Image 1 (cartoon, one colour):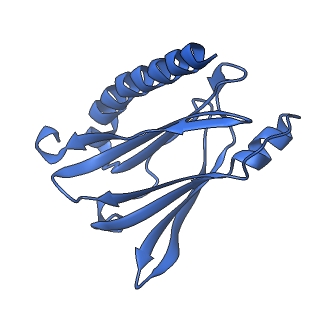
Image 2 (tube, rainbow, N blue to C red):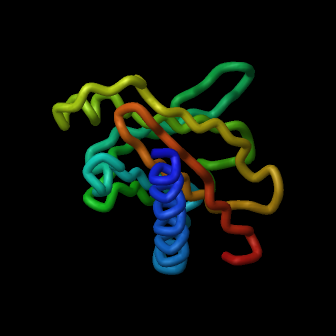
Length: 150
């Protein structure tokens, strides 16, 4: 079971890396896309379509909602915000996983998945956050494309 889970996670990250490069080239030519999310349903082996996502920024010890979105047919959300809306700082991205599983008729353990990260701490400006999820297991990561690659 452990080996299968690890293989699924590796495949998801590789898929997201390939997609991040593809979308980076296409989207950045039209409009800045500093933050993109991709969610995969590991139970059904499909993109997690209709997953609600909320982005928060920490200001003065308080989390402030910045933007919300819902994953599309590819399990992705592009153009959540522009570069101007995404200054350096601490961010939290919340994936509402329990309602997603409930809609699919599956009972889930976790209410949500959160990723907290510091944006633009170095030279990174574009982030892709891939999520691999099942009702009792969630894995996340980050793909950061350096500013020099824009």
